[in-house]
Image (cartoon, rainbow, N blue to C red):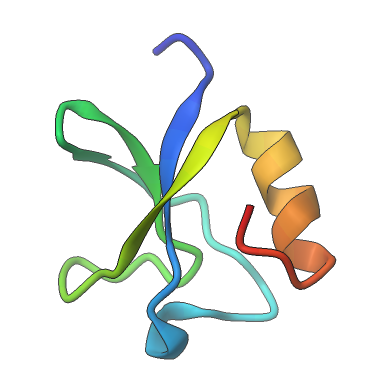
Amino acid sequence: MDGQIAYVCVQPAHQTRRPQEALTMHDEQWAYCPGAYRGNHQWRRTGGLDLGELKAALAKGSPA
C-alpha cells in the first residue's frame, strides 16, 4: 500500500461518528468506508489522501 486512499464512501447510511479501520479496493485503488460496510457504497474521489488526513477531513464534516 502506498498510503494514498483514492476513494471515500459517502453513502449516508455508511457514515458514523466512530470511523472504523475499513479499507477495501475500488477500481484497483484503495478505498475507505467509515462504517466498514461491505457493499452498496457511493464512492467519491479523495484526490489522494492518507488515512489520517481522510479521517481528519471526515471529522470536520467534509467527505474529502
